[in-house]
Length: 273
Image (cartoon, rainbow, N blue to C red; front, side):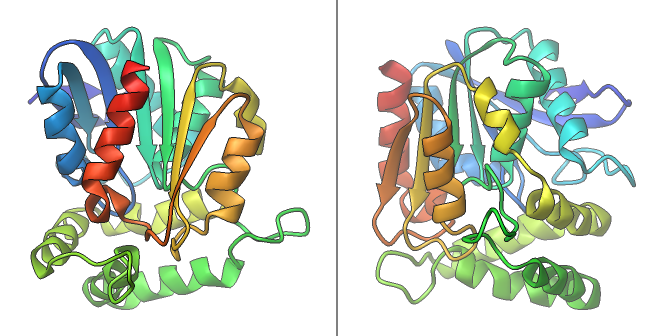
């Protein structure tokens, strides 16, 4: 698999599967590109060139001490798109990865992009404020960082139970997927893991929404307790001209696994539409 060098010299691990029109998959926190397994394989088999990369600090990419802000991470996405000469691409961001999509569309004018997708995404604004009353209280993000600094392995084990909606009617995954997700998370730099909480928890993407001038698919679960749907999926669909919103009834945050087949079908329909 190729390594792409970002603007600051950080090397990013890239998976490049199949042939056809490119589809770029940007993973969520605190995972890596492997977390797209249930979409990447069928998309490649369906005739698309599927590119999925590990965010800086995560997976097999290099782990610099700094650079975990969305301007830098959008520049990393630009390096992948330019480095592989991708054109006419669709870019999908899951969870935190939606922020890279939004910032790329504004900071890089959506260069090379024909379609965009936000899956369980943090866009447009996670933090609760006077003008975002449905957002997440800032204390939640502080507690996350405290838990990560005190006992990162233990914190992440508990985190994935809610991530996948364990014990809920529309959620739940195998013990194997829980362990696999934890293993991916433990590959990441602890500094990157903590810094990215600030990035996705406090970055304002509402000004970026106007830059979405391509067909955009928004998918979100109504049972998402990690990134609640009102300040994210519903707000994004309302703020992006012509966006298509698909709500999965009761689905948790990690619907790439819990609703893998449904999501893949929706992505393929969108890509071919």
